[in-house]
Length: 541
Image 1 (tube, rainbow, N blue to C red):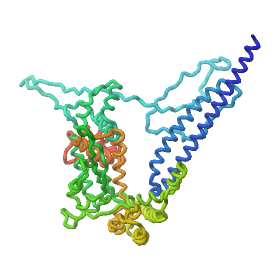
Image 2 (tube, rainbow, N blue to C red):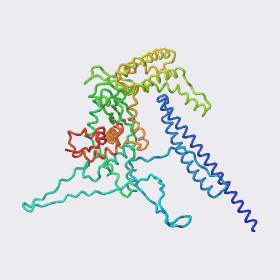
Image 3 (cartoon, rainbow, N blue to C red):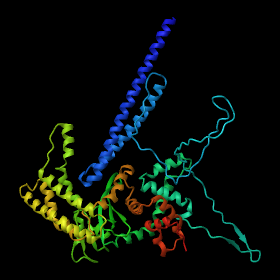
Image 4 (cartoon, one colour):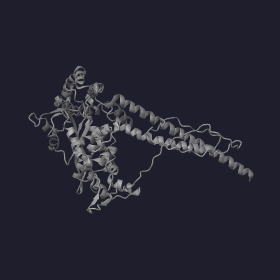
């Protein structure tokens, strides 16, 4: 029996060693996979930084690679801990140590520090003596978060009665951003930010509040959102005035599903962006959004009824009414988007996508030498634009006349020649026709340094809405669409000016009820930021 027990112990020890070896091997494999994914991600980001617009799908691919790296990194850590636990049971097996695939986390200096001192030993671990003296200390820093704290603020207004005339005196009630003032400005800002910046539907927000011990009915949250939009309408009007005072605007639109009886309609969110930074303008960037239940031409005409100047947009036919010469209050000059024109050519010139398709299906993807040449020439134009970004309009125009105009003129001749050899129904011929019919719009940027080559500023402004559609699924009504457009205008503008939207909304909602109308401009995001940087609080007169 003793011999059998010894054999069983030996077998158990051998099994433990094999399991430990296997755990270490799995950890090494997971670490290598995470390391490879990390290096691929770094390479992809560097390629996008270097080549920019040459990689149409690079942004989406980088998002996918970041998700893949996230999963592999988590798996590697899990396997590392499993290997450590297995090795701890078996002495002969060499432990596994991970390579440094991630940068060391450093904590910002502005965060408060809480010092927790562990009780020191009272006797020597070796001899048991009590004559100990301090030699130094080891400090381990751990980042922690305090759960959200809720509190009820009780504002007390004492009443006084006059001994002489018996009249009652009392301090006036404080102003509130919303009627009855049941929610403080920080809570109002949180609700608005979660719904329109984090794209969280109010029903999810209500459920989360309830789990934190503060049940707030969905109807109450919905009422609050309407009250917030109404309270901020004066700020919105000032943003609108600032946008349409620009000499140049970007314009674009995107679809939004709208709930209707028994179906879902397709509404539109229109974006108009003022961004003078590419030509060294000092005016702050601003975005203005509008909602409409369809895409009829009357909507952009109404939005821009008081505007005259430069307008960068795609070739939507509804904009044509804006470009008539006798328009009041003045003409709008069209500037086309080279990024839009480049995309159909890129479909026939994407070498990387063709290689992926061939690897996946074994079939050769059609690549066009003509499309590759067109993309190469357009990319050369974009490369010039990257070099002159931020220069004055005069300097930008001079560089374009010297370096970009010869490329543009040669491209016109090339497109004209190659289109004659293609069938009018061919996709490349359609792309060429699209450009040649609007050539004045595409070449307008050569003569005006304020113009950009692309309409990417408007597309960036709409990106959050495109992401939010996956979360909130649809607008509840046309009225809800208009409210969302107003709140997007405020939040996107704050982000464009590097302002935390939630902090800005909280401060504005705290003071807007009694802020003088003549000083509303002080509450605009860029002015608010300047006061914060200077350490000066904005006080009502």
